[in-house]
Length: 91
Image 1 (tube, rainbow, N blue to C red):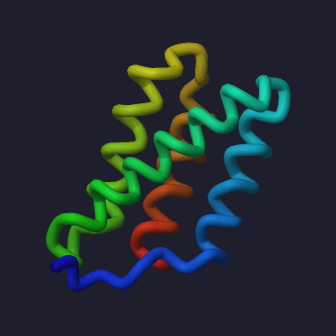
Image 2 (cartoon, rainbow, N blue to C red):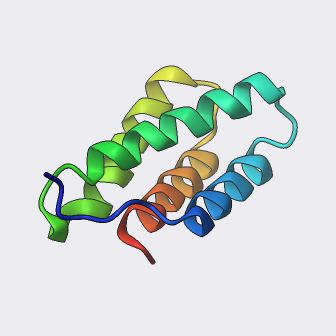
């Protein structure tokens, strides 16, 4: 069993806002895909040690997004991966 509680709705809402802000020129399908990948990265991050949750989520998000959405620029990748870190770790 994972000792980390579920991600609060407010953090997911904040993540969704970052996705929309970073991808406002992209299609709804692209934004949904990116949001889904971020959720997967957060879930992955929260499976490990509680002291590494944020780092694992940020790294996973960066890798997933870079591989799945190569058209994203470095600033968007950074902002999105940091948003995943905040959502996973509770910052």
